[in-house]
Amino acid sequence: MTKSLPSPETVLVISAFALIYMLVLLRKTLQGKFDLYDFLMLSTVAIIPAGFALFPTLAYLVSHLTGVVFPFVVMFGALFLVVFAFMHNMTARLHRLERQNCALIQEQSLLALELKGKESSQSRG
Image 1 (cartoon, one colour):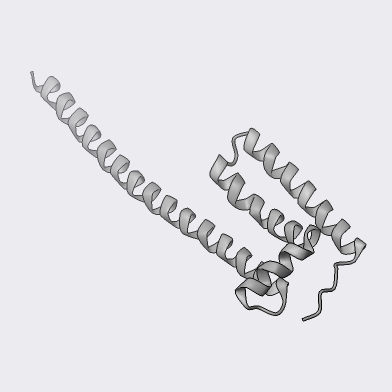
Image 2: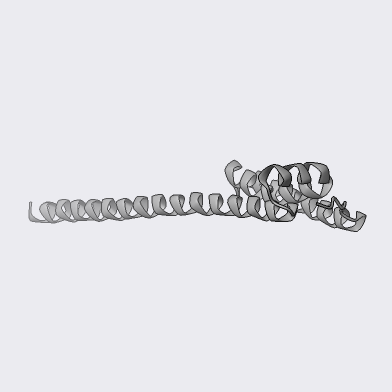
């Protein structure tokens, strides 16, 4: 197994991307567009490649421990794991909001029906 280090250009590009991406995520989190969980999950998309580029010996250690020849395969596997966990959480939130929306529509309909009944009883009396 060869242990080649990433070029300085690669490290620079990945580091610049990670820094800019993290700053954008932080700004959106502070503005309230993302919650803390979203910030953490989305930031791992920048942290994992940066970790593999900035600490290549750790990347080779992880790939050796998992039995994978190329560290980037482990990195992409970790990124897929993060994406699937994020999608699972988003799906669960979407279904919870869908159920809440249905309950609110039903409640609004019942209140409208009750209000209509009160109006009709007052007009008769």
